[in-house]
Amino acid sequence: MKIKVINPNTTESMTATIAAAARAVAAPGTEIIPATSRCGAVSIEGHYDEAMSIVGLVDAINEEPAADAYVIACFGDPGLLAAREIATGPVLGIAEAAMHAASFIATGFSIVTTLERTRVIAEHLVRNYGMEHHCRGVRATDIPVLELENPTSNCRTLILEECERAIVEDKAGAIVLGCAGMADLNSFLEEKLGVPVIDGVTAAVKFAEALVSLGLRTAKRGDLAYPLHKPYKGTLSAYAPPDRTNSKTPLSRARG
Image (cartoon, rainbow, N blue to C red; front, side):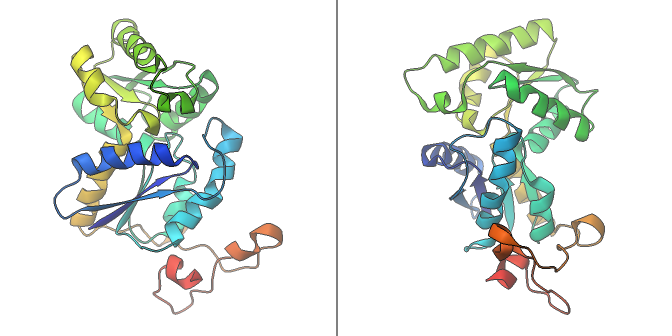
């Protein structure tokens, strides 16, 4: 089984952190294929960054090697539904995966994320995923995403302190980490906090393995059918969906 884990930002060192976490939980026989966006922002910290990241995400899905499933390793789950339109195998966003995992093991969880400006994005996802009755709160640490990559920063301390407040003030039974760049923190935090800490990268990998093992693929009827064939203009002309009439070729290969 091959799972492509896509970092929609362009920071290679963050991809390495994400890939290490994914490989640590992958089952024997599962190959983790890490991919870093070739265009877009060095970090995704707002609506604009998310919108601009989707082209790089599409490229990563369409490029070889193909995979049995895909993980979007950004907590905003940017381009998730668009990715499901073009992929045959399951596509999981780490926010959706983490929230579902937390809801299985606790009656309430809190999300601890990075910048205050991204809190509303996580709150929108909570509502979109029907998690209002499970999520006790979304907490921002105001840590820039790339600071998570800085070994001399006090990020771990700030994140730990916010998690502690969530447990006391929100009565959270579990913590969801609100950034793929935190993928290496869950063991450290669990040991300190004594409650389950869910990293969406690892949760998404295990869910992806389960879906592929069950033989489940993305629905290709209705809104997740392959995109309609039509011309695109300007800088996006190369992204025009191909004509798939009477074709069973996945979009990634149809585009070549």
